[in-house]
Amino acid sequence: MKALLFGLLCAVFSPLLLVGSLVFACRVRFINMPRGISGTAYEPYMARLILHLIGSRRDAVSERIAAHLPALSPLVMRILVHPMANAARWSGFRGSFFAFPGPRPSTLLTFISHRTHFFDTAIAAAAEPNSPIRQFVFLGAGWDTRAYGPLSEGVDLAGTGVKVFEVDEPPTQQVKVHALRAAGAEHSHVTFAPTDFNQQSWLDSLREHGFDPALPTFILWEGVTMYLDDAAVSKTLAQVAGLAPGSRIAFDFLSRELVFSRKPYVVMGTYMRYALKSFYGERMHFGISTAAPARQQVMDFFEGRGLVVENFEPLGREAGRSTPIGGLVVASR
Ligand SMILES: C[S@@+](CC[C@H](N)C(=O)[O-])C[C@H]1O[C@@H](n2cnc3c(N)ncnc32)[C@H](O)[C@@H]1O
Image (cartoon, rainbow, N blue to C red; front, top):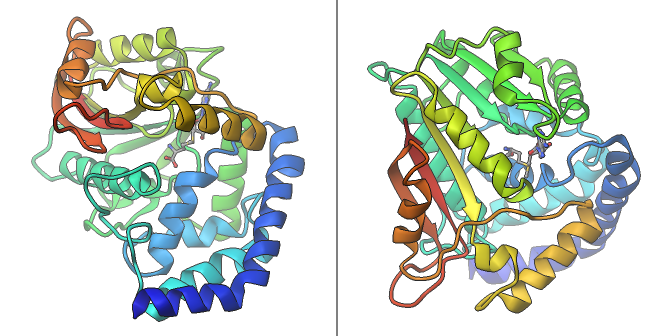
């Protein structure tokens, strides 16, 4: 019944949704991309925004900055995001796409909800009063608004007194700071370190901005590794291994089989590469093999990199000969 009502509402809103999607796509291509602003940052952000709008996950600042992000704009909010969220809210339909924490095993369509929950939980644990963590770093922060809580888990990094840093490429970060200001969102507890990982070490950049490598640090590296090469990922993990004891990094990765269009993802991988390149102008370079046994492959990857895997969840089925589409990891020094 809920699914039927959701379908009916989407049908009623379909002219708006269609035009909204077109306006959004044009704004990505003609406003975002020429200014070097991340396009892929909208994907996880929009998922979190909709989860907030339908009341599944609290993240008020994601809504406040929305109209100030170049590809969204008040018009796109009115004719695309709000109608979609209203259809889910009014019908009560969550399906697997709008569900939070999301179905397990997750799929390529639902993994962002799973991933969001996994990282929310990791941040909540790192922010507990008895946690050794004294600094939070969002590497490749995009439009992530977790630093400006409070979030559903009761976490409010603004109120903990810990240092918070965000690192991203300069054009993307400038837009984010502008959006936070325009939305009147409190951000004085966050230090912004504009950095292109390909040009400069994020650790050097953080040090220049007041980061103390002697303090235990939590690093969130969400939705980024797939866009970097093997050397850049290995270098970052080696740098984390050199931080203060108790430090940890939480990140996600895609399966190497998917990134390089190998069995069983020949078709899906080829399509994803094409879609990412043509829509956002971005390429995937990094993945960890998840061919069975996936968990062992992940452990092998970390062995010798000076980090211990504290938590691993596959994205997709891990049983038997299955090849998950990727994984979620918390690794500590
Ligand atoms: C898919 S977005 C994820 C954003 C955010 N972590 C989230 O989950 O909402 C990838 C982010 O990585 C950043 N990024 C990609 N390549 C980068 C590089 N070479 N240097 C710095 N940041 C980079 C992009 O600007 C973008 O914000």
